[in-house]
Amino acid sequence: MFKRSSFAALGALALMLTAVTATPALACGGFFCFTQPVDQSAERILYVHENGTITLHVQISYKGDDQNFSWLLPLTKEPVKTAEGKHLAVGSDTIFQLLEQSTSPTFYLNWKNNGNCYGPQCYLEDATAGGSGGGKGNGVDVLAQDSVGPYDYALLQGTSGADIIKWLNDNKFVQPAATEPLIQSYAQKSYVFLALKLKKDNSAGDLVPVTVTVAEDAPCLPIRLTALATQPDMPIVAWVLDKARAIPKNYLHVELNEAAVDWLTGGGNYKSVVSKAVDQGSGHAFLTEMAKKTANLQIQFASPSWDVSKFAGITDPAKFLAKMFEMQLPRTTQMQNLIKKYIKKPEAFKDVPDSEFYNCIQNAGSGFGNSECKKYVDAAVAAGFDGAALAKDLNDLVIKPLQTLDAQYKSAGWLTRLYTTLSAEEMTKDPIFAVNPDLPEVSQQHSAEAEPICEEGKTQATQVKITFKDGFVLTLPVDSNAQNNCGFFGPVDIQKSATNTVVGGGQPLGKLQVLDESGAPIPIDQSVADQVDAELNNAVVGQPSLSPLFISKLPKVSWDPHTTKPTTTTKPFATTDSVGDSGCSAAPHGSPAGLGALLLGLFAAAAWLRGRKPE
Image (cartoon, rainbow, N blue to C red; front, top):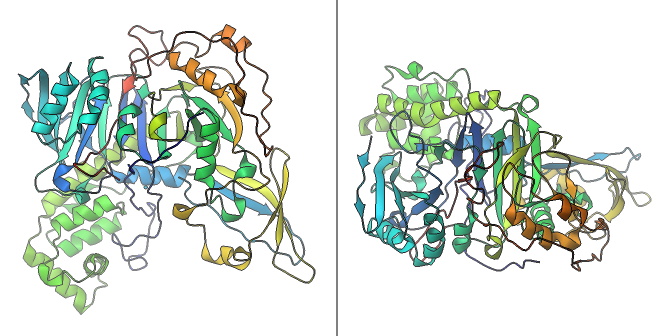
């Protein structure tokens, strides 16, 4: 089994978003008032498969010296250019917020009536936020250099990892020497590298998601580079928008033993349970947190009310901001940065909180401002306001990307949310994703029956009897601190979630499986998880992941998730001698029809720092 160790944190950009619904202008202040916290600890990525291409949406997170920020993305081929002739585009943070809101797992108890005996009720809201051509020199082909949004970027190719790193560092796309062997492994497969850095006058606060499109049919996540700057048990969330339910092709698949989850805190130990279940499943496994037909999961990425022409001729920043709010444009960190870029807060008001300054300006534009608000508006006008430029950025960076994804979502068949946690020593092979049209939907909403048990003469439960869907019954004590507080103070703070499984609930791992591109899941006994994991190194999209002979030799599943003393002895059985390529190009050119030939490698080592790693 894999063991976990300590590495520097590589986090995900965490942003906040209120739903795209009508909100009274004064109820929450506006674009600088957030009410929904979002988990900040996971890497997030969305793959959209459409018409022979994969479009990748990636959140980028970074804390440190702004001028030392850089981000490297290995790709199997040169990206498809945008209408503007760029190799990538700026994305929208709204995408990830809406995905989180609609797909995050929740845990709730259906309480039975037991007279005047009442139990705590908590719910988990979020369980997991035209350029210059290049030249050739030093063994590196510079295919393009350009800029988009807050980024300068370069697209390059070469056969020498050392030469590529030298070029990157010489041109301020900072990469540590330790990445050379991994960059070399991708370079030998003729990958191209897309490198980003912040423009000279931009800061880490200007970071926004990016989108890249490649003419391929199957996504792969080249995680091996990330191992050099990652935290233990780094969560990875991958959404796949495709014609059928997505599966991990070369990783095992786990289902949780829900009795190990702490239902009395709304799933406060959920992440820890998933991490331990993945460890019990060889360390290379994904959990399907949700999989639904898009017709059964309504997500509105764009509103019909969004029309950039409505901003034409508006030169008053207050009226502009009020119109943005009236149109129900997303309220996110990305939107805040745009507002602050074009509606400047003068130095004289530096001590005024942004929420007060900008929401007051918005209210003034809506006719609700006071004398203090007029001072802020006058100051913003004096500082200069370019409404036409702001309208263009709103259209290019927010409205158009969301309208495009909204159309793709409505035409797609399925949305799948896959989740895992990986430590550095487990980042030894790149996850490959495929689809299986035979698998059923998976709900993100989990429920169990609960009966409160009170001491004689008491109305607050001191115990709870929980009956799970598999028939397992567990009686738990109710912590005295939770007996009265939980229902009044809302969901548990999952940033400080528990790390232990529920005593008596059993093992985190409920079921271990191999999912393939057709048919039902193949059950795997936990005792042979490592051997099956090694066999999956040979998995090729369009071909069975396991041979009939290998499957016939699998031992009968004897794993009991409810035991408190699991058997972890590996049972030897015949396996193949060969071990496949652990990289994203494991599938050869000309592989059988299905999800295509050369697999797409899209995501790799995110940000790097001199002397400090990203968070």
